[in-house]
Image (cartoon, rainbow, N blue to C red; front, side):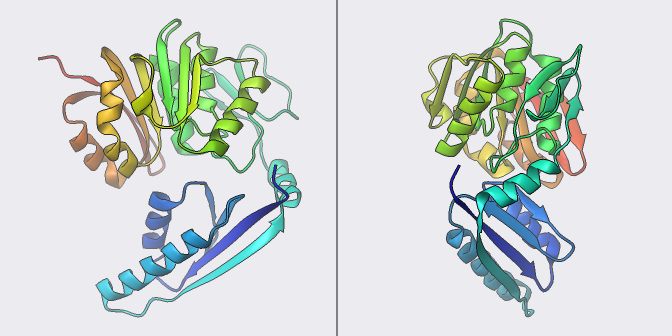
Length: 277
């Protein structure tokens, strides 16, 4: 863990929803939403995101022909202070057969326990995108099937599949996420067949189930890679999709048939399979 983390407070004067949409699509880590502001925290410096918010505000002001101000406050904090406070706020969560809990909580009997300590990496089971993905995994992942978790983050989805008896590969383009996944694999006494920093394009095989919990724009961008690594009879589990972007994703995967749709709040997980000719 690094000694410091960075916090960027974004306080727009108006059009709060549009700024939320922009952050959903561009911020690579989770953020906190307050009544009048957003707070982004990361161990990586946040100057680039701050600049991006400024550019978005200027473009929005021109497009709407109305004054739009945004207050940006960038701070550096001792890491241990925030993580300790954050950890104290985390409670276990149950999703289907899974019980996700940090190390300072006891496992639950007759459940598939997943130990995830919260950090700055996304994926503790509390967000709707993760919980709906876990529901889909519980329904569609069977023992001995091959699974890949693309954009694995904390590794929680791949670990869930492994708990069900699947053979799992995982990848992420972010090195911090790979290290987080390795730590969580150790906590859960789980091994993946392959884990690498990089894209799904270099996956070593084809898979029965391809899981990608990212964001809608990225799911559209990497659609060809995901399709190439899915077996003809396989299943795609796509998440991280705001419901207003669902049609955009479905259009890109129009050669696949919808099997399931799991929604929570404004988020959607789609389960697709290749259409039979």
